[in-house]
Each structure stands twice: as structure tokens, then as C-alpha cells.
Length: 315
Image (cartoon, rainbow, N blue to C red):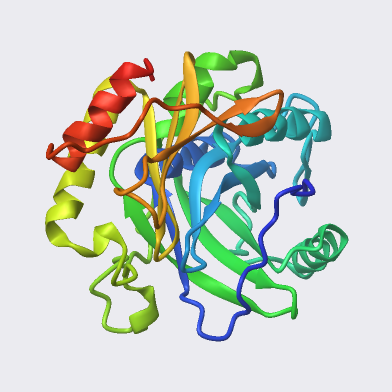
């Protein structure tokens, strides 16, 4: 477990949804790791973010390192391999270590063992974490089964349901191409047994607080402005490999842009569009605001004004 220098304080289990968000491509990666090892435990680590509503969102799965210890009843990750990946994923993509995974291969144990629970809670206490995810894989007649569990600092554990996003994580392609020496390439097959899936929205059991809402005076509370925002996102995705949307609160949305040639965060806070969006760039591992030319919508559509601004500073 890697200590997260930028850890956030997450909610306790009370009122927390039993969901985990993951891309289909990352599930396929897990499946390949599990199916290639039917008799020995294998494992790795989970990197991603916590959504504004406290849900874990898996953005990148790390496999076993070259010096990992693998036994019929035990797996220990290669710490040097984990730390090297953690440094890059945090610095380059702002992804954090939100969980671990390992396979119980052909054993009949589809949930964490007593030892798994003890080591997870010990690691959480050591790192000061409020919440952490553990995935357990199993090998079943050539296919992989995967179950996810969430631990809380209180010692409570809940089983999670899967919200599966289509396609590949936007970080997988970029990271694997940039750091081929830090990527484990499994030789198994992507054969996955059915998961307990659910929807992120329109779930009758979801609490009202899980629906994305904006403050009344924030620009995205207007449906026409949300169309303008979609146009901005579409433009950025036409130019960059990875564009992700993060909502910090009801009055601040951030676009994170990442590819081998550019990394920055485009923030639309409460002052937008009367004030210019803020562009945050990493300089010597510290965030800095990029200077911008004078901002003036001048009767243009918001999307046009933002796109023209981005073009003027060559982002």
C-alpha cells in the first residue's frame, strides 16, 4: 500500500453507495492476469480517483512486478515496481493508489481471507486512509471471476457492484506507450464470468445525493451551457489522447488533459464565464497557473470563446 501524499478524507460507510466504476478494458486486463495463473496467486494494484460522491473509479490497473512473490496461498507485490508506477501515475495523471487486487486462482474462496482483511486494515491505519478497495479474482474453468470489496477505517467491509464503462481507460493507451518498461503484459485470455453490474444513475436505490447537481448560480446549472461544455470537451478530445472530467463541487468542474506532449488541468470555477477559465500546469512537480491573455466572451458562444483562448496559447 503506497502512502498517498494527497489523500482526501472520504465519507464513512453510512449512506455510501455500494458501487465501483471501472472501464471494460481494465476488467479485460484483470481477466488476462487471472486466467494466465490457474495455480498460483497473482495480483497488483488499482489506481484511480474518488468521485465527488465518494465512489471509487478505477482508471488504471497495475499487474505483478518482476520480483513479486507468488505462492499457492500468498501474493506479495514487487514494492519497487509498485512505487515506480505510483510515482509516474500520480505525477503525470493525478491518479492515486485506491486499492489492490489479487487472485485466489482455483481455490474456492471468492472473498477476502482473514489475512487479507487484517493486512488491508493494517495498511489503511499506517497510511491514514479512510477507505480502500480490495478485488479478489478466481479462476473458473478457463475464465476469470472478479469481486470487489470496500473497507472502511471503522473495520467494516462491503461488497461492491460494478458500473462498467465501455471501451478502454483513457490512461491505458497513454501510460503503456510512455512507460513500456513499467507495464506488465499478461498472457492470459479476456474471458470474464458475469459480474453483478448496476447503473451509475437512474438506480432506484440510489440516494438523491448521488445525482450530479450544480449550484444554482454556477454556469453548468443551465442546460444550454452544458451543451457548450460538451462542445469544449469534444474539441479537446479531438486533439489529445486523454481528456477526463472531474467535479470538485457544485461550483467547480475540471478537465484533465494528458498525453505525451501536454499535461494540464482546465478549471471552470464559480467565476466562469465572467472570468477566464484557469489553466493549471505542473512545473517541477508543483501546480502553477498559466498566464492567459485578456478574457472577453464578446458575444461569442462560451465554447467558441474557450476554444479560441486555448488556440491562442497553443494548448
